[in-house]
Amino acid sequence: EAGVAQSPRYKIIEKRQSVAFWCNPISGHATLYWYQQILGQGPKLLIQFQNNGVVDDSQLPKDRFSAERLKGVDSTLKIQPAKLEDSAVYLCASSEGGEQFFGPGTRLTVL
Amino acid sequence: GENVEQHPSTLSVQEGDSAVIKCTYSDSASNYFPWYKQELGKRPQLIIDIRSNVGEKKDQRIAVTLNKTAKHFSLHITETQPEDSAVYFCAASTSNAGNMLTFGGGTRLMVKP
Image 1 (cartoon, chains in turn red, brown):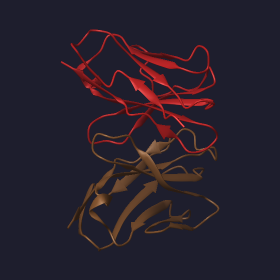
Image 2 (tube, helix red, strand yellow):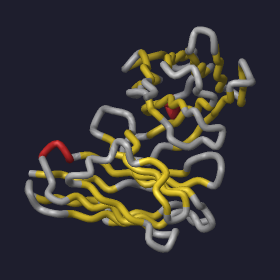
Image 3 (cartoon, chains in turn red, purple):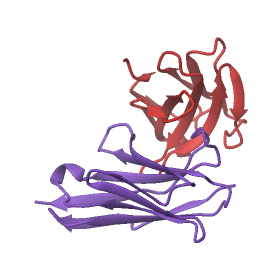
C-alpha cells in the first residue's frame, strides 16, 4: 500500500513570498491533517479535514495560512505571505478511523 | 485546550538498559494516547498506543502504562538497542478515533553501544 505523499520535500523562500505544499493521502482515508513541526518540538495540528470539510482549524493562522481539500482527496496548504517564524517541517497525515499515517514532510526555510 | 508535557527532553542509556519516558496531560476527557518514534529526517511512526479503558499495554520490548487519575502515561523500552535511538513523542486525544492529537515536546533517546 502506498503511503502519504508530499511535495516538494524542500523549499527555500524569502520572507513575504508565497509558498504552497501538496499532500496525497493514503487511498480511502477520509481524514487528512496538516501539522507544523518546528525544529526541536512536537508536531502541532494546523487543520483537520474529514473528506472535503474542515473539522478543526483552530490553530491555523488564518491571516496568512489557508488549506483546501476540494475533492476530498488531495490537499494543498498555502502560506501567504511567509514570515521567518514559519520555518518548519510541514507534515501531512491521513487516517481512516484510527492510526494516523504521516508523510515525509516538506521542510520550509524562510530567509 | 489540551496540553501535553513530556520529560525528559533527552535521555542517554547504555545498550541493554531500560528507558522510561513520561508524559502528563491536562484534559481529563482525553482517552487515546499514542506514542510515535521519529528517526532523524524521517516521518513520525506509531509504535504503540493505549486507550483509557486499559492501564497497561505491551508489545515485545515496548510497554505503555496509563494512570488516568493522575493524568500521566509512560513509555517503557527494555533491553534497549542502538536502533532505538530516535526522538519519541507522546500524544493525547479526546477522540476514540484518534483524531486531533496534541503532541508532547519530544524526548531524544540515545542508546550507546
